[in-house]
Length: 439
Image 1 (cartoon, helix red, strand yellow):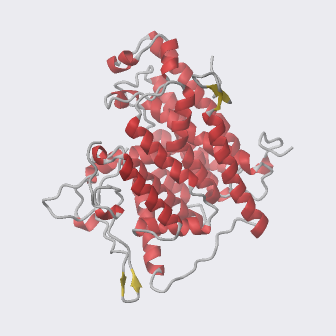
Image 2 (cartoon, rainbow, N blue to C red):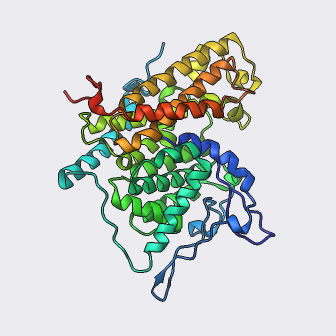
Image 3 (cartoon, helix red, strand yellow):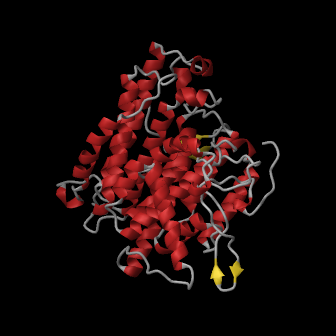
């Protein structure tokens, strides 16, 4: 899950690094590896964000976020380095009742929904704010968005195609969010992951704070900084995604689904919460804002669970097991069975239950897609339908996700796109009874 480097550098220096685009963030990073030593013509070159006369420019930075280099503003290198979806409450070892991961996450959902509702009350709509043009910066900002679009088009082809139906403002904003998520995801899974430490992530977090305060460090930051100034996007999901990267640094096992759910929220559910304010909710929708956000969250969780089930063998080779330890034990399986990579009846039965859970989240997500703004539905439907098919492919591979990678063929993708488009034409008022409708 990493982004290769497109930075021009001295030859002697070796430098490599939801709501509908979670698949591309993970899969596209593998393709990017081939560009690790890109030619200067394909490299990203941005200028230092310093005042030279009256012209404002940005620091050199690539799609990569290697925190060892000046892209972060710090050149130092750190050293070393029978189940429900989820229950509402869990008991601590001391016997005290603690808030579950689901409830923690839902509190974030309520916060994000409240932000949108406040803008609706004050503005009466969710139209983007007009550009505030600072002399000398408009062309740079346009170039920043264009570069985000190029990255999305190259490494998230299906999702990018869907965004073309969106308004130009929403389209560019989604590209900016996509690129930030990719850069963040790459931190702990790129070739330089061994150099990434908690303090390095702290610097990335501080840089995010600056970005939200209108102080972008580089061109790609500038695109997102402009986006969050126009849409009711809150910083918490972005902070939470970075927290997911921290988990990957220190945690390679999850004792139960409550723990895994929180991880899935951090690294994928957050994307849904980032995207809804940009995607927009259909004016005719009778669904509560909270329910639409919850559906977006469910899609992120479903996509990440699908990633986990698809990549069991690959993750095991890296010493990671993203499966609930207690459920493995209940199925008569252990870490040794995962590392052995042998498909047995026990494994098949275990996988059937895990796939069933992922599909439950996809079902929940479907309830909210129809409530989105009409121009935003196609990329989300495409992502949902294509990702669900990965679960079908795991089954078709006889649950061998140790040595066989489940993927959706190009032919099936081509078939799915018009189906997704047809579904995107169905709006909230087309349904006689919506499970998300207000009472």
